[in-house]
Each structure stands twice: as structure tokens, then as C-alpha cells.
Image (cartoon, rainbow, N blue to C red; front, side, top):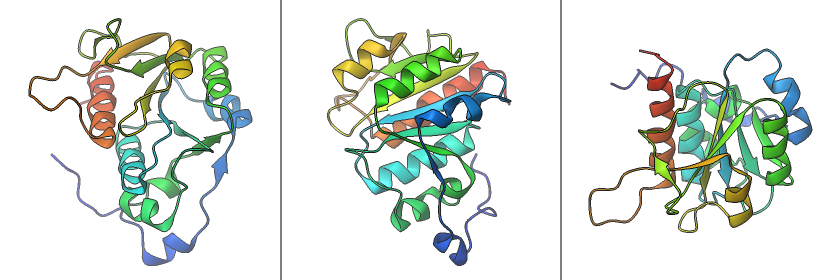
Length: 187
């Protein structure tokens, strides 16, 4: 069941600047967060998808979202409108080097789960998603990059039963994040 839209940004909120962090800020963003859930987006270029991913992350209680500085949609007014306030309330780390950001997360005790249809991937529903965790989703069409996948601690796949080979990245983000929320015992 969806929540009411009582937290939608007022028109003036879209003119308020969004604070973007960089990978050096990751330890500070994690400092007081117990068992953080983090969404990492590897080159999501469509502003509507980025906005929807931010909205999913905020609704799932993510500590922050990591995006790439290059090959990613910037946080524009379109992203902010689709995010319905999440871009203003959720910290966004804009990484110069995604691998370095992932290593920084690992150095701070966060497990990294990448989404991939690789043969070594385990079902999302069989994986342990409790505890400090970052879920990495890739660009539309290409998925996560090879070096990103190699940096992950484990790979996940969403079981696909139909003929279409994949879900939209924002839908995948919602499925993965809320499976983690379910496993963490939130009701």
C-alpha cells in the first residue's frame, strides 16, 4: 500500500539547492547509522529513473544514495520532481570513482551486493540482506560495469519468470530495497 503524498515538495523546494556529497564524506554519513541500507547506482542516465530510484531509497529508509559523477544523470529539476522530495531529504553521494566509493563503504563495514544476471548470482530471495548493506544497480541496458561487479562481495539476481529479460532499474531498486527491508523485520 502506498503512503499518502503529504510529503511532496512545495514548488519552492525545487529551487532550494540539493547538497551533493563526495566519497570522502562516506565515513561521516555512516558514523551514527546502525545497519545502514545504501543504494548505489552505477551510471543511471535517465532522469526519471534516477528520480524514481531516489524515491524508492528514501521510502525504504536508506542512509544515502551513491551515484556516479560521470555517465549519470545530474540531479535536475526533473529528477527532483520525480523523487517527490527525496532529493532534498536523502543524502546523495556523487562519486568521482565508484570503485573507490565501494571500497570506502567496505572499509566502514558495509557489505556490497551487486545486481547481475551473471551465472554466479544468487536469487535475491535466498541472499542475506540484513546488516550493513549497499545494493548496487547498473545503468539501463548495460547493468553494472565489470569492475563494479568485481568489487562487490556477492551478486544478486531478481528471478524473472516471463519472457522479458529484465525490469526497469527503478523497479529493480524497489524490489531489492524492499526485500532488504522485509528481511530486516520492518513491517
